[in-house]
Length: 116
Image 1 (cartoon, one colour):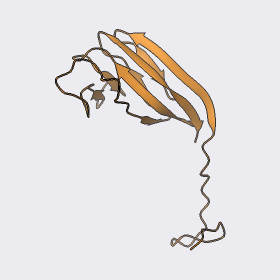
Image 2 (image 1 turned 90 degrees about the vertical axis):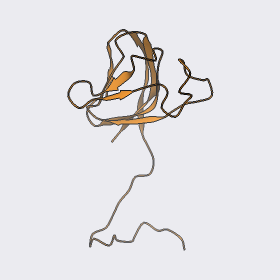
Image 3 (image 1 turned 60 degrees about the vertical axis):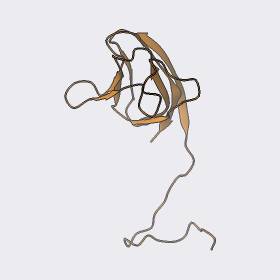
């Protein structure tokens, strides 16, 4: 069955989806020691990688109340104190999301911003 653009959703209205992402900028950041690395701008989202060097001081997503600490051994080698070169995780972060480096060591981000 071929997909066409003229159908309607089961909810009673027509559905329009723009399947083409629109890049608006590149993000390349390197910081150290407890610094805000990046905040996703309004009406944008980020897709890319985030890595850090200190096993005990991970970067944080939305630091403060209810933040997420992102330890480097998640889906990696838990006995290693550094990333293995063959492991890359892609992050998708939405408008308003803040990324902060750990309290020691360095952290790096590289990716692309897109329009929502």
